[in-house]
Structures are given as structure tokens and as C-alpha cells.
Image (tube, rainbow, N blue to C red; front, side, top):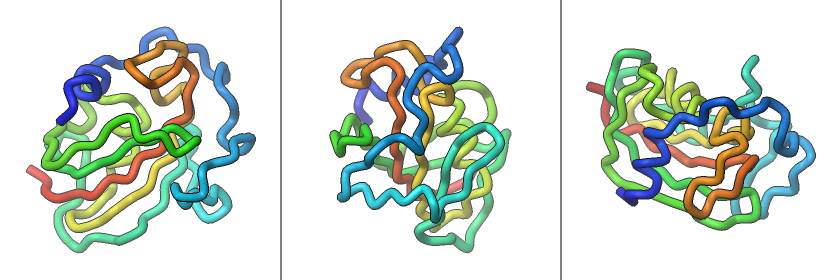
Length: 146
């Protein structure tokens, strides 16, 4: 796994001001990301998710450790990181809030798209090639729940 994202995922954006970045509804996403917010579910926190493939295995929940393949992009289509067989604890505050919330409820074998607004990502912090106040797009495949 890319060291930058590992460090960034462990770094939880503290003190980020909600609403500082553009609202996801105002963003034009690169076509190759295949993001259509109208077909996605929006949670109370502002996270958007869509199951591309619904798995049939164990369900990810707070207190479990998940093993995932993931890719993360900026809305313009720039890939900022990807990883295979990355293991993360869920619900412990070790991940950015949008990733943590977005993986919960997935079943092993499933693939999910996430659109994470800045306040659930890194907020006003710039992390590596991710500018401050960035909306993030992830595609996650859940491989295992432990």
C-alpha cells in the first residue's frame, strides 16, 4: 500500500470546517469515474455511496477489521492512491470518516463507490497530492472481514 495514503488514512482530519469545500452536487466528475449522484444513496453525514456489486459474505461493521482493494481519485480523474489487500480496523477513528462510514455495511465480495465530501475526508488539510477541501472518490472491493 502506498505509504502516503496509509499515513493519510491514519491521520484523521481534525478541526476541519464543514462546508469549506465545494458541495458534491456542484462538482463535474470526470466521465471515467462513472459518478452519477442521482443514482447514489446520500447518508445523513453527506457521504454518497453506491453498491456496484453486492457481496454475499460477512458484513463489515464497527469493531471488525476489513481487507480491501481500493482506489482513490480526485473528481477530475486523478488517481491519488490505490492498494491491494489493505487491512483496516473499522469504527476506531483510524480512517477518514467517509471511508470508515462507507465500508460499513458492505459484504465480502462486494464493490462500492464512495463520494466523500471534504468534511468527511481531510477537510482543510492538504495531504500529499490531495489538495485541501477536496471531495474524494473511492472504489472499494471488500475481500475479507475479520
